[in-house]
Length: 335
View 1 (cartoon, one colour):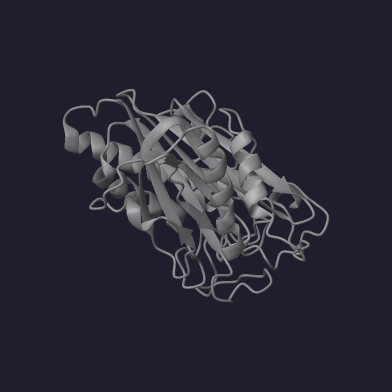
View 2 (tube, rainbow, N blue to C red; view 1 turned 120 degrees about the vertical axis):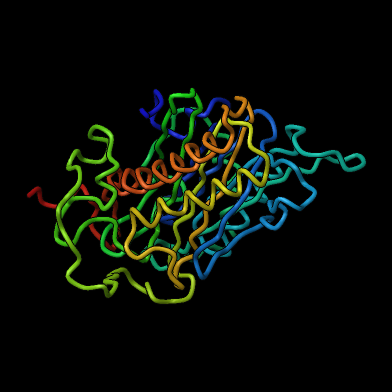
């Protein structure tokens, strides 16, 4: 398996990602969309998720496809980003027909970045505007690190960010991941620059340090970011995608297995203080290879690998900004 040409989730043909950031707010929005509706599903493992329109993603629900997915900062306020995206998509004529209206389906998930040092004294909720700006920015090539939903994100010891990665299987199926990392846990081995996901690194995509023979000297979590143990004060929210023809049940299974990628890259993951969740997207452009069960297993495994790599790439790409409460990975001393 090798990354696609961009090493981004948009190596899955037809997908586009847009970011909108507000430096003063230290927050932002990331939107994934495509030219037409796509299959989507969801798996939630964290104890404090924040979501919109996610119940309809269950395999037994009526709605078969969605028009966009939104990852946003701002805690509950960030859910308004999906309203901005839906409004803009409606103007474009996207969505299912309901009498004279078009109704876009835009599930969303948020992370908590209200205690990250940014100016949160807005007079009116800014996330609807940021959602529309992110949708307008949607493209195949997009930035990683301190942008979009990852603008002010933090991990236990370092600034977090927005990450992405991809893989192309021997069958030709492409898998990609997109993640906003705002975790309670750590992403590097203690007192080192080496990432927990180092054994999965391809080339030098997050520093070229590779695997490290190291251990944690305690099983106790060591979060140093402000308010880390508050309800919903953290969250890693992500999307895995493939061009394989999966139905909602198959996509749901891909999301479930992809959660293993978070556990490989973050210590600890899926805590009561996190709202960790993973969306799954299937565009259906490529017929599922035979034999079906083996092909699905390969896709699910690749999704977990991509998500772990995307977590490391998010933190690796974060850059210093005024008011940051934690250092960035690039500020750590080599050696």
